[in-house]
Structure formats: structure tokens, C-alpha cells
Length: 188
Image (cartoon, rainbow, N blue to C red; front, side):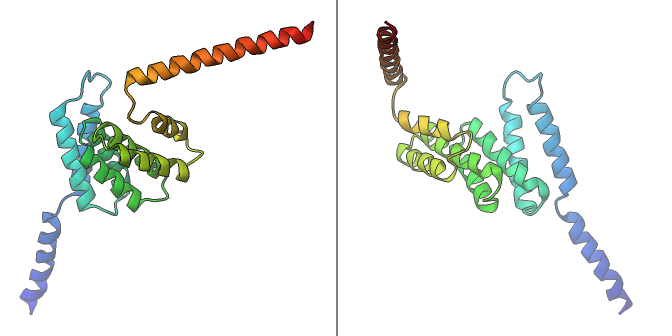
């Protein structure tokens, strides 16, 4: 009986100490973030970015309810997006939106998802669907105008956008000139 009493706590201690350490993982993440996003860094270190993404993913899996998980999920989505890994970025942004639907960054996750479908995955139909959803859900968000602009230019080449801009500028100039002309006649 005495042996069982001594063995049980030792067994529990052994199981607990074999698990991942939250502090160690957070420290590793912090260290790589500081190196990767240092003001002296001139370009993205692909190897460090991959290591950081692995650490973010492990932390999210190992500590799903931790206070840092929200931040790491968003950062992982952003880093995946900025390294061109659209599928993984979408997974992180979807996880963020489903886990923290009322968080202020959920709106950005939706916008970034539309951006990924448009610019990385080249799925314009899905991008359109998500930009529309973003505008409907967040009409007063800082990115609402950007979403509307993206919708207006979806699938257009840069040359087409320049031509449309030039036409609009010419039409605006003609309208201003016409308004000035009419205003000048009223003064006489």
C-alpha cells in the first residue's frame, strides 16, 4: 500500500514533466520573432519563418486555451499569408474566426481570407464571396473601402485599371471645368 502511495505521485510528476512546457515554447517563439522581425533584418529569413510557423502551430495545438494562442493564431495566419502559403494561412484565419468570432481581428481575418483567395490562390469567385461578406458584416470597418475597391477591380489587369482611372480622371476634369463655366455665367 505504501509503495502505491509513493509510486502514484511519481508517475503523475513524470507524465506532467514529459509534456510540452508553455514557457519554453513561448520563449522560443519570442526569440525567433525578435530575430526575424528585428529592425536590422533586411529580408525574410525563410528558415527562421518556417521554424516560427512550426512553433506557432505546436503552441496552438498544445495550449488551445492559453492567453497567447489567440495572438499566435493571428500571427501564424499573417506569416503564412506573407510567405505565400495560402492554404495554411486560410486554416489559421478560419480557426481564428471560429474560435474568436467577436474579436476585433476576426474582421481582418475575413478580409485577409478574401485577399488570399484573390491574390494567392487565384479563386476570384471565392474572393468575391468573401469581400461581399466582409462589407455586409463590417460596413464601417477601416478596410470596407478596400474591400469595395477590390470587388470593383476583381480580375482586372493593372493596364485595365489604369485605363479606367484615366477615363474617370478625364470625366472628373471635364465636369469640374463645366461647373466652373456655369458658375462664371451666373456671376455675370
